[in-house]
Image (cartoon, rainbow, N blue to C red; front, side, top):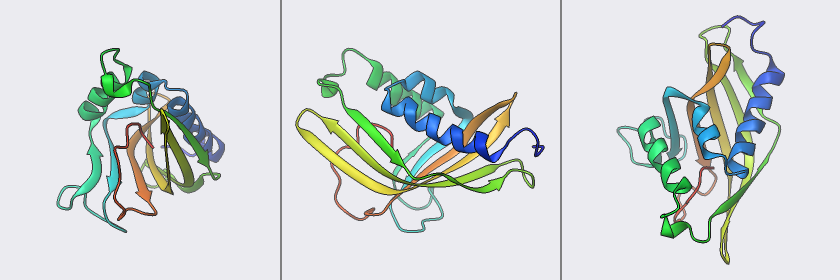
Length: 162
């Protein structure tokens, strides 16, 4: 990836725009941000290194993400009546790598996340890490990793995507 194609502002805007697609329930637009080989990972342990040999809260490839998006978009998804809603409050993303060395741009963002459905309100906080690559001039998510500060707490069902 050449340094001229991807600026820090473009990377930071990508993270904010990705959160907006979720808050606005534009599931298909959000899914389109993922690379075909992209993954969504929520580790179960602090500083977990391996999503395959250790259990995770979530580790989903494009197929599983597509199934969840179809479920959230479906009219016959009775667990989503009323529909869940969410809000991301993000600290300014920090660019860790601009991709000049290996083609992978890395960012880390502190967040507060609220999810609500009916009279239920759940809040989560932690850090999200993005690994982005450029494909045909567009940034794509290779990995979105969500590290919750309270990863070891009992959770209800997280319906949407943090």
